Amino acid sequence: MYENKTLVCKECGQEFIFTAGEQEFYAQQGFQNEPKKCKACRMAKKNAGRAPRELFTTTCANCGGEAKIPFEPSNDRPVYCSECFAAMKAEQQ
Image (tube, rainbow, N blue to C red):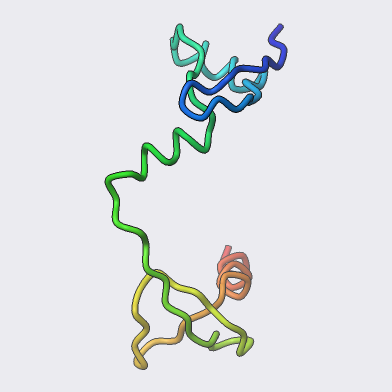
C-alpha cells in the first residue's frame, strides 16, 4: 500500500527517505503531514536545549575491558561494559 518516498529536508536541503513503514506509522497516529526535516535535523532540534551527556570511562568488572558509563563510578559497586551487562541481563530472564 505504501511506497518509500524521497523528500527534501527544509533545514539542511538533503534528500531523505520517508519509508513505507514510517508512512504507515504516521497514518496510524493520525498525522496528516509528511515530515519536513530529515532524522538528523529532527534529532538536532530535539537535543538543542540539552547539555551534552558526559560519559565516564572505567574498567568492566567482568571482562576487564573498557566500559563507558553515564555516571561517575564508585568503588563500592561493580560496573560492567555493555556486552557483559546485556549478557548478565539475558541470563536472568
